[in-house]
Image 1 (cartoon, rainbow, N blue to C red):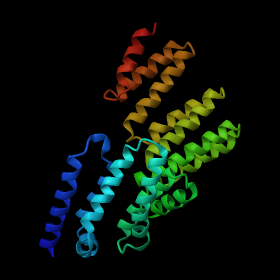
Image 2 (image 1 turned 30 degrees about the vertical axis):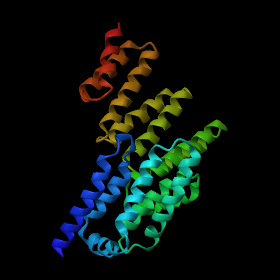
Image 3 (image 1 turned 45 degrees about the vertical axis):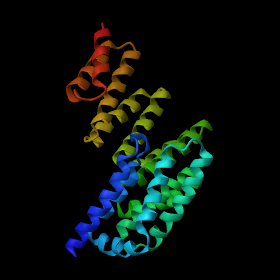
Image 4 (image 1 turned 90 degrees about the vertical axis):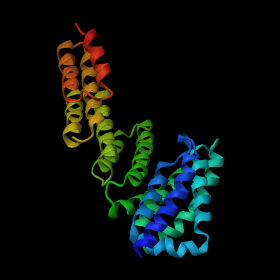
Length: 269
């Protein structure tokens, strides 16, 4: 069985990554690459899924699905993208419902959730993403679905002047089992809301919470430090602005925000 697994893994890897090499960077779909890699590297899934599939035209189907993902990444318009997404769903939904492998089923659910979001089937997308997150907290793909749904809904709420409801949506995302990037995004948008409303004390306190709550998000920490420094600079407080820019350079010297912070320091009196 070990030899079979290695052989299958090698054949699958060779076939799929030969196809991938022929595509431009823009055409590659990293989410699907991860989906494929996980499947062929898991020996149990090789035994349960790949071996039977070899007898029923699996490679032909897999190549077709990979091609569809590539086409979806460069679809010229929404109508074309919707047609491709609908065809992909016909592949992923049966896997999500019937696969004997829970990890494989959840990966198919992730793909289905993203496709349903593209098709504007928001509640179905939310349901599938939440199911994945129950078993795989912090799943990047499922987190992205919930994060994008949150941003869309809060944008609508704020446009209607329903700010408290928007803030509640941010809080729900902060406390959900989503990837930290999305939690940090919700914290940042909450702080920015208070800053725009003139509540400087609350806003600065909430900004400061982001690097403490998410110490591993290096770029987010730098972004927050820059925002705080920029705010003090706009408020004509060069002393506090300088201190904030210098703190950014001290704590996040390799961040993408560091060069701009250095330039701003030169302009301060």
